[in-house]
Image (tube, rainbow, N blue to C red):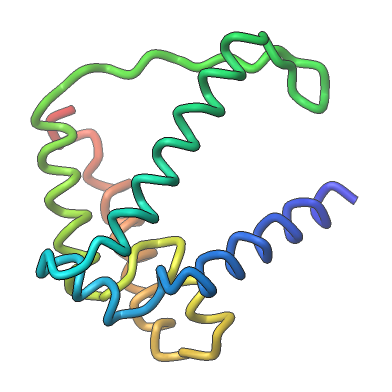
Length: 137
């Protein structure tokens, strides 16, 4: 039953991503060329909604489904960490034409060539795990 809920939430996420054209390569291309507000609107809405939900969780001291209080661990503030991570993420997004969420939506939409990108994304994640302790954090 638990996995069914997660699966339904994932399907809903995929439908919203697909219907909002967030997985469209042309929309992403427009965004990187600063020609359209469409993708910035989607990203801005997601960030604003996330901030609001986190605020409401913190304000109302919500508990998880299993009764454990939801808490947020403070993050280390580090400019190089976010700067280099953001640059690498943005380059990967620009090269592949999709970030991690839309990659799986594209598989569901039938664009099977994205499986190559997913394979290399997983390889990059594995590589990061191997060299993580040698990188500045």
